[in-house]
Every structure is written in C-alpha cells, then in structure tokens.
Image (cartoon, rainbow, N blue to C red):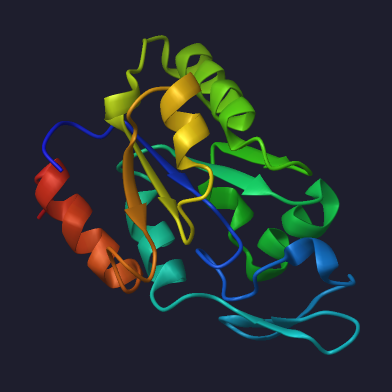
Length: 169
C-alpha cells in the first residue's frame, strides 16, 4: 500500500458488523453482549472480529469516518447501541448508493477540521464490496482500498496493515 494514510473510511454493513442491511432492522436495539445487539424482532447483529478492539486502538492515531448506504436513524442507533459512534469524526450515512457523493462530504469535513488538503491516495477505504469503487475512483480519485473478508479477514489483520503503513509500535 505505500504512502501515508491520513484518513480511514469504513463502511458499516458487512464491514464493521455482520448484518448486510441495517436499514432493514427494527429499533429499538438491545445490546446482549459486548459485540452482539438484537433489534426488536430479535434479529442478531454481531461486530466483525476485532472491530471494537481496532476502533479503540486506532481512533486516536488516524481520523475515522463512516461511508454507509443506510437510513441514518437505524444505522446511527446501531452504532450507539454498540457504543461505537464516539470513535468516528464524521458519520456519512445516507440512504442512497452514491458513495462518491458521501466521500465528497467526508473530504470537505476533513479539510475543514484539520485545516489541510487531503489527496485521494491518502485515504484508506474499507468495504466488504467493491461495487462503489468505480464511481469513487472516477469522482474522488484513487483512494487506497481494502475489501473486508478478501484483502483482510478481520480487523486484527487490518490493524497489522495500518501498523506497517503508519509505522506504529
């Protein structure tokens, strides 16, 4: 991957948690363990292996943003039920498939908060699917990309990649 990573952008469905469509869930949510939440229909949602550990460890090292195709209220409440909302500087949760539009807002947020430009190559985007990449590459640029479950099997492996990239520990 070579080159500095200034921003880490994570998808939610299938990436941070195992459920593939948080918009189909029915709040309120109830946390039944550190890494498992159920909705009001008893549908279970589990965090991906190492997700909580990773977010706790990395959030103070590199800024984190969400880029998720979901209904805001359902995805945000699920993040809150897991207690993960506090780790993200920007929550780009919108109910449409045009993730490149959300990416533009994430970049604007980054530049406003950190008072510096950011190049596409300085962003690492992690998603369980590649479907949005062509538009992101076309409209945003060549962000670094890792496919959860393919390029890395879990958040422990993702941390190992970032550890090398950011010269941690």
